[in-house]
Image (cartoon, rainbow over the protein chains, first blue to last red):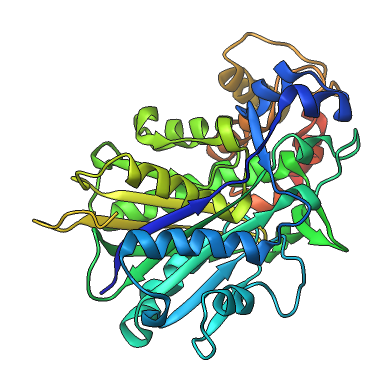
Length: 316
Length: 77
């Protein structure tokens, strides 16, 4: 048994509008908004590091949970844009929290990494103790802000999110999950030599089939109707994709929380940032099932179902 | 109904229009399909022709024209 106990997030101050991006990629601000739903995104400062911004979200999450870092049993850090491939940012996040022996592992999967982290944390928390899942991305350093890189440049922003998964308590019980990998299309979405590469059309097509399929599988086997889900918290990849997923699932669009208009696609951080914002906006706690879903490099994708706990209030 | 006519039938269902694209006309360049509509088109083809199209085949290159769709379906046996 494992519970969602708290979320946290951090976003850079610098706002980058479509008006700023558009001339660099030979597009118009209106076109960027139309194809992505993004009005602006945030960019980290040159002095920021992936581990550093991950640490900020981690601290926010721990503060909301009322937990000290010393009480953590494990840390998982998802990032597809880490400054260094090996070791990745997990050990630096742990060190930044003042920990010198708590296991900290990297999940180098863009976009879907934090979902994988939540799923692994649900399995590990009963054995290891509270697991802190962090998603931290500085995608602005991995994209090409020119015409050639247009399809990626318009989408991505920087930010970090965190979640605490606990075997003892929380505001929602992690009831079930599904997770998939299909390496046959790995070349459609990858980071190599420090640069992000994406076949946007192929990724959209794959995601618009795989994500609803995963959520349908999860909901069907748990006998939950899409209309009964309180909120769908998805990787904020593209607003049109989220609308499409809602339509395929025949679920009310308003149940899909979105913040992509303000932050862009923050890759593995986006799921946790969205969850943190949504939970913060609902201090009364949850009354229905929550569904998380993400799709990313690998290709990796999946979904997680969390359900309310009777007579339990949100910790956040 | 021959294969190309059945492909056109699916295309018309997806677009909701009585269209008549040339067999070698790009369905993407002409604006008849986009990434989202292609997934509907593929699902329609699976139903119409009783085939299973793997996600890894979801490429505009394979479904860009009626001729290419026809060749793809032929390759599926």
